[in-house]
Image (cartoon, rainbow over all chains, first blue to last red; front, top):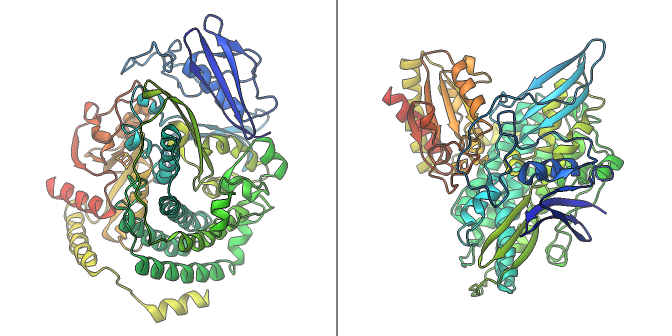
Length: 455
Length: 168
Ligand code: SF4
């Protein structure tokens, strides 16, 4: 079974820990006075971050866990505060004395540590990477994040579903549409309604356009990190064009506010025209880039994640598909009818992740064609019923999960599992036979979100 | 590679949106002039993300695509605060980032300026205050100029930089 998420919530007398697998959902009660339970990390290594987060958020202890270090709460965060408990209502906290974080380190003769971050050299989000190095070779990497932790889960509690839309679409700006679709599905579940097909197609088109933009960006950035800047000039122009197109059809360059229930038609001719040019350009790009041996020399065998490890770490999205795992939330009737074809590679290296993106751009172009629709249906939402709702969406990074519990019409518990939260934990596995100069390339080939995983 | 260059030769420059191009032309010219006068032809910016949603960063990255091509005007995004004149600050200044942002600012040699980017640092984005957020950033730094928007478009960022250059 694939572990999707593990999180806790507070009940009247107990805490409840909810574990979501791809097939089942398990619930365990933990008494508030002795909040302790067993770890899952021995079977599912990616449970480590979930459990460390649960401790930080609620103070629930995993008695047999091998890693009990704080995750979200960094050096200056007071140790006895667990902000997700309902009794915690402070809007600001004091910095306490600096308590150093103990990094995972390999030591030995001539082995040294390289600390990178939280602020990086380029225009990228902050996060920390701690390397144990033997000369140029990376012996180990620890990924340490949560510098961008904004307390979003807490921020949304007590609000109605309509009030949270603007925040949810800004959790991770480059996956905004995917987040909005998750919220849309939760609204529909809460109002017990079905979405008219035309709206569903419209939103699916936005999602594929968002994926196209993200992938195009990476198709430029990845070669750029291998020293081939021309690809970046080419692809960044295409992604800018795509972003302008998104603005044209949704009113915003990142599609903020795009997924709503109003019906506006898309100018079909101009959109199709643009799709044709993009198709031509991407074919040209592929033809050109496949033919540059020195580039593929850097891509091939670099940053390899084996199929076995990809499954063991429950990876998802582009990373998993590049290692031969067929996971994609778009495997359903609706998408298959509109031309969806899952991308699959086996080698698990930078080359494979690059090819997956190329394939997905081409597939998205095809799907966008099929999602264009002229008819429109009227739609208004009914009132929302209380309950616990789960929704999934395949963002440009991978499977996104949003869960919301509504009680008395307002949010009692809000939880998000960004695909990056899982895939970050598999990043260190890709470094085994590479040198530190390859790290930016490997990291970029996965292109995970910091904002989405830090919340 | 030959295919690439032959296509480049045949198609040469393509202008798609003439209005935008005209506006861009004027802004570019002004930025270039100002950078030349006030920063001897090179303005170094250290972009620091203090807890954004990443859209503001994406727009800054877009500044180097061939439409905007900011580097041609003498404006560089540098890797270290020690090489910078300006700190361009995005995000809501999270509790966890605050010490590092302060540190980055201290590392910038004087004279230095802070320009805030997007609605986040001034708490105008939809986010609300939690225990993990320390914004607005003017509690920590004197902000010379603010570029509003959620996110500001590349063009708006360029206009904002120009306003900043005119201000100082
Ligand atoms: S200002 Fe808006 S776009 Fe920029 S980081 Fe904040 S939420 Fe994202």
